[in-house]
Image (cartoon, rainbow, N blue to C red; front, side, top):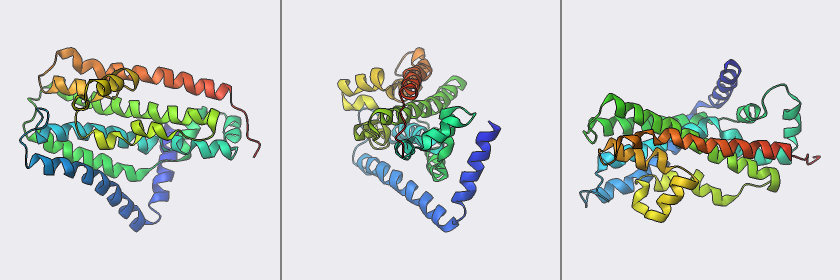
Length: 257
């Protein structure tokens, strides 16, 4: 952990070398996600609710997804560049070092500017909590925390799958962006709004609904208590992700570049 924090501090200092650029990058990240949610705000000016959800409830829903994706991108950015690591034979050097392979890949690249989105999610979350959208209890606060942290874990798993694919193709599969970048767009609504087929895919294939739609029903007193435990079940998604990583490493062949 100490070594990881050392790498993080190096990336932060590197990003802060050009402070104006860092600030503008943070501002750009915030403006992108703000623009996404503004479409909901404008829509709610005409309608009182969408699918039975009010604006504070939708803000709560979106802030969970935004925080999860941003945390994952902060610390798993090295996986996004994994195709380049393989094609340039940098993975050979990584395999010679006496440190876990995945740890080294994660330390290759980090994106401190994503902390701006985490801060934005926190602001939206505070507003949603203070709006009275949910009758809060200590149990519900714990469930909300699990939604964010387990959501970051699920997105980390998606990034890992995308990286593992490059063991066999040397290129990322663009279709996986539906689950990597897409949630920042369609996560502004509870996933149940998009229909049963989409909800089934996001429950049993890529369990994003387990960290957003289903526990949200518990927070809003629309579902049983065990819906609040589903974010923990979503972490089981990391098991096949880890197995795929081990399979990819076992079948890795150097490019010789």
